[in-house]
Amino acid sequence: GASLAAAPSTAAAATPSVGRDSAVAPEYTPEAAAAAWDGAAEWFVWNDFALGPAAEEEVRRAHSLWKRPAIAVYTRRSLAVDLTALPLRPAERMAVAADIAPEYSLLEVPAPAAGSAISAAGFKPSFKPLGLSELPLATGQLVAIDAEFIAVSEEVTRRGKRGANVVVKPARLALARVSCVRGQGPHHGEAFVDSYIAQAEPVVDYLTRFSGLRPGDLDPSVSPHHITTMKAAYLKLRQLVDAGCVFVGHGLKKDFEMINMRVPPEQVLDTVELFWAPGKRRISLRFLAFHMCEIHMSNRLHDTHDSIEDARTALQIYDKYVELRAQGQAVLDAAIDELYRVGREMSWEVPDAPDRR
Image (spheres, helix red, strand yellow):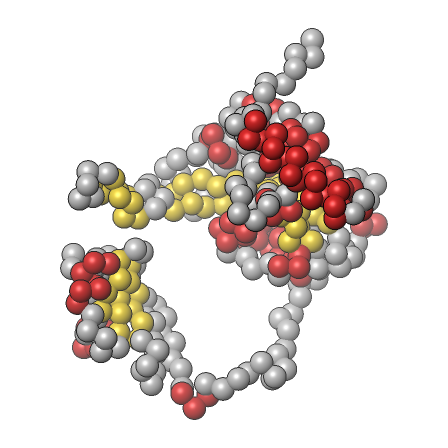
């Protein structure tokens, strides 16, 4: 739906969210908005990529026929002072302990149909939950993570003035699978979370090439996987964040944005950034695995993804980074320069794995 907001110059700002059936008038295009704004407008309406001025009477006209405000936020100018010196009470951390309900616990695989866990009977776990000896999780403990997404709405496009399709509304994605792998300890590299998420909305595209998921994988009546709810998967991740775990992965910024979870920057080790040279391209997980670790990712060779394999591979790449960094910054910089040189020579393509027969 569209949203309305006051300009910063107003004494009070409100952001009522308009219902999904609302429509932005055709004149609210970037070009028209720029031409129409005389600098005096105090309210604006935006809907995805469309932005334009709005009359105050329209903003305040809220009724149940098609426009229902969902959120109203007000600010008071007299309180607009520097608050950085004020002590803030930290949010309460979730406990990682055995008294958490089984469907949210990191310690066990819930029984089929117990609570929020809705896996079909007979599923074979692809992971080993944490043991009591692994708790409490230490601050800074490494956890490799990867997530896969599916589309629950299709992309909306329109024909632009030059004949090219313009995206009016991007496809809406939803978390479909998340995997966490131990980053240290005697079970290094072993998954302890591998949750397939039952969807509350119809799936319009499994994005199999990117997610590795297929029809039936998220259906608890036929899926061979551990099916759970979004709430259960989210709370498991929340426990790891609150425990101070450090997440290792590839392209984690986007993953956490899609999951709608804020993770402090100091708790993220992204292999995209670790082996990136400023001003140059960011390198794919597959090529990093091939060049830095001599790994041919079996899933990527078939244009599919597997979140456990991707998480493990990111962990191995990070271990290589730690090894190089221990030898000095000069050694690490030289390795990154060599990575880019080889990548350019190979056009960033990974050769097929050698035949092991």
